[in-house]
Image 1: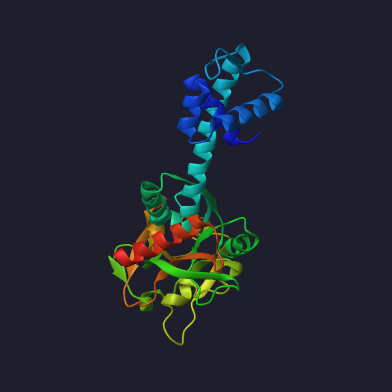
Image 2: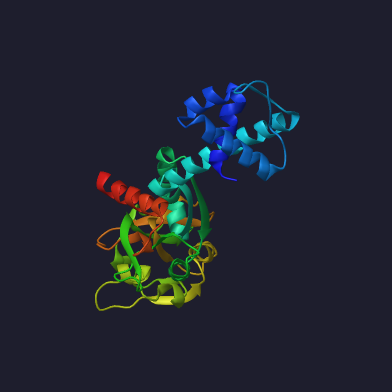
Length: 297
């Protein structure tokens, strides 16, 4: 059974006349009659009773089948529409990964919300994960787009561009001698004890602390933590100070004070990362939307 059989049947059922239905379908009446007989043979049921040579009435089976045939054609039309929208990138699903700081900055809510205004039939599946985990997920196809820390070079098969720059801020325990200042310089921090993220998170990046270290000097790291939130908790507990992305200052953690660092040229950058050979229209549409966001800013 094909969709054309359903269209032929519905035309006859609505017209209750083979000649008029044939004219509506723009086919010959004998051809239409043959197709209806073929449909009845497939179903093993009589759908019409003949009143005259052309006039017909629906049987009980025909009335029941008409309801299903109409719903099937509606669903087929909807499926075709969805397929066309998906091909244009107007519908579909996108798996997005993001680092903690990108979530705090408002980058995720702003970009996903903005894209959905013009693409309301697109859904997102969000997963917070570290940068290198995102690269792996992009490679195996379980992730479509990643919001990561920016790198100078991306793994083979991946590409990316900077989408947001955040300043570096110093995180201080409440009551620290520098907390009374509105801003600090790197030179004021050289004698301090620092809390940093783990070496695994630092690999491949310009580290936060390295970004504010005066030339020819090294700062003292007394403790490392698995993520930025834990770093902040250790700062609040008085374990040391730290250097974090300005996005994290939006987290109101008791016992932590953020201050601007002046005289630092480097920034904490977030990047959009994706597969170079991406073929899904909805994903490429999202990437182009993100590029447009950069141009607009």
